[in-house]
Length: 421
Image 1 (cartoon, rainbow, N blue to C red):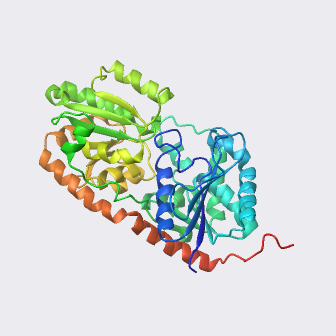
Image 2 (cartoon, rainbow, N blue to C red):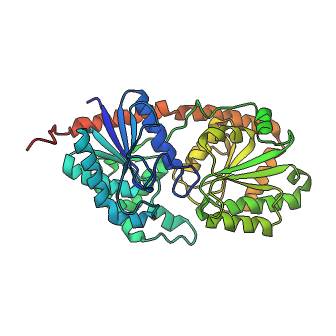
Image 3 (spheres, rainbow, N blue to C red):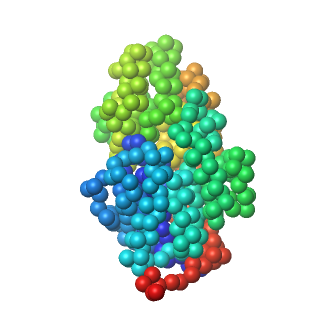
């Protein structure tokens, strides 16, 4: 069966939300870019998300041909934490059903993202009989086990729903073999339902640019060594490990430290994590080396990636690590914690370096090695670029459509007239 219309659910965060803000990161990029790729192929894609502002339009079609972002009222029109949204999911599902009834639209498949959306997808399946595929993006069980001191709000609720989704969903999409094993081990998922399809990268947006020109555009000196962090500012991202590594480099190689600038992209002024990190930077006397740049639009990120000597991802947990993939596509080597999807994506000593999580000493040594060996840095960047090409969104969309069409063939949607009595 050829899929003509697809519904995507991203209940707790809009694909149009500013990247780097709370709850806006790799998942937002995934939903947006995949929907646009499907739209370019002529598929109709409706992305349903919760209205968080009274000023949001009912429908936003700014993502291009055949793609609509539909805002559904469910609960107060303000940002809420995921566990607060849970009590409004029935209202969200009802809003989706009401919209599709008015529009007289049907879907061959629903593709849900994150545990809240999986709950809604199941309710839609009960009403429509439409099969659904689900992608978790992060797993509550893994956060509980891996992140030091992590205590998820209402963890039992999230984990219980995640477990139910393994039974409800017709297909489970995971980014890496490691995530597949986590679903089998921690959730007892049916292995026959699980398919490994990684996220993609926009290779037209992210590609190598002249490094010198990128540095000039950012106001950097030609001999400046830019270290880059991109992502949401939250404790599990481990940004403090970069600060501690900088302090180590200053002690061991003051000459090299004098050329280093660290740009931290993500978050907004006043965020509790940004306040904490600023205070740590000041305690370590790193103010002259560290810049907090806040959230940046994706259109600006290629300049930062190509100006950087390396992108650093010292996370405690990443289900995949799309920032690493964007950096690699830009020809920039990545230094990352050997955790989750990063351990799968970054190839040690080939496209960058893998280090133990929270090991600032190992991070410092790898930074020194990259910054003092330009030929090796160029080789790692070139190999990173070559590897990233296989993750183009066109390739990823091909893999997903093959799965989706097979799924729709097994579970055809019954045709109905919403106005027939």
